[in-house]
Picture 1: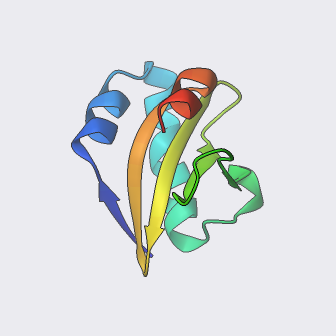
Picture 2 (picture 1 turned 90 degrees about the vertical axis):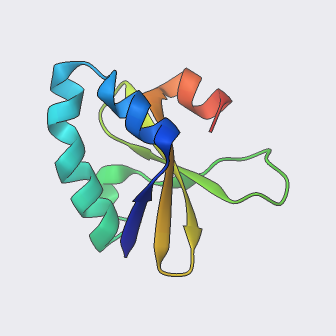
Length: 88
């Protein structure tokens, strides 16, 4: 699958702690290969009506959100769990 980064995602990723930024390339590689990879613990965010937005795990604290459009994964946000899910 192809990954597309929104400006919001790129800016939020640049503000992550150094340790989290170091983990991001591996997580995104896993996502591109298999969005349902067990290490990502991907799940659909509930309560968004028709919008299908998914969350995946970078580590215990950090989550990122994405949408699927055909063969493209649109990376939307990345932040600490609650902040990321409140504003996917």
